[in-house]
Image 1 (cartoon, rainbow, N blue to C red):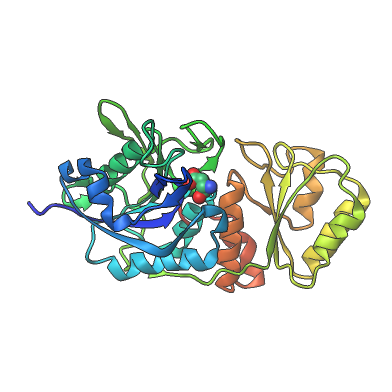
Image 2: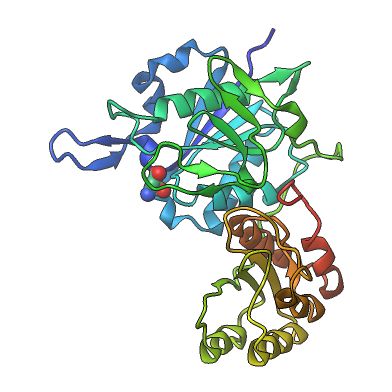
Amino acid sequence: MKKPKILLIYTGGTIGMIKDADTGALRAFDFNNILTRIPELRLLDCEIETTSFREPIDSSNMNPKYWADIAQIIESNYHDFDGFVVLHGSDTMSYSASALSFMLENLSKPVIFTGSQLPIGDLRTDAKENLITSIQIASLQIKGLPAIREVGLYFEYKLYRGNRTTKINAEHFEAFESLNYPHLAESGVHLNINEEFLWRSQSNEDLVVRTKMNTNVAILKLFPGISRPILEAVLTSNLIEGLVLETYGSGNATTEPWFIDLLKKAISKGLHIINVTQCAGGSVTMGQYETSSQLKSIGVISGKDITTEAAITKLMYLLGENIGQSEFQKTFETPLRGEMT
Ligand code: ASP
């Protein structure tokens, strides 16, 4: 049987860094040498090729242009490879995994994001396990078809649906969580795939890559004491077309008339406002409390149990696709890639 072919795409981040022997500072190493650095990769039952951003980045510099670059690398290699592993800094990995899930329509091959908290050259590194298991997951086949057919994120023994994740810890090896969706796989003595939770696209259409992201968007987190002039400044900006509003609990906000009036006015002028909870887990249910009933009646869109990372990237994506005003709410409230329940 033919060995699966996996393309490793190195974008940057700690995983690909080594300590400079003279200065001790971390710097990106030439990823084309990965097989010499990690000889264990040769033991894997797959063929591995690598490609790298010309100038690898710290993921704090990630932006929609780089997302489009990753999507285009996948598109142009789609037919020659069975799976893709994207090496990425952990800081914004959840945003990128979410963005790519929307950009890659009808994806039927694995795209696994991974990275590490310690560089690959460090004695105690978590990079090797993350990388090796990600490649194994991307190579998995069931009856000749890829087992994973979505954008996943693998970190510290768990595979998550990428657009369900959030980075929850800046130091622990267990840096990610997916509080509103079960793990897709767990790696222990055995690699356990939770097949019932895997994404299966309803269509058999070819991959379509959509890279037009509209960045006239913002995220606003509510807090007790948020003031009228500040909210006004955000909502009356000439540029803003979409806003992710991080509300309390199950989607609640102050009922003060000035607050509701400002939102109402902005919505009537065409601004799309998405209600996402600032809690780490759980769902927005507008109408459950009096403090969310008005939001529902003025046309705020429910983000349900979506993460902020998936909400902002879905907003950029749908605005980029020019979804009409009347369908926008319905389209946003529909799960497109398993990002909401
Ligand atoms: N600052 C780094 C980055 O996100 C951290 C990491 O690689 O995990 O690129």
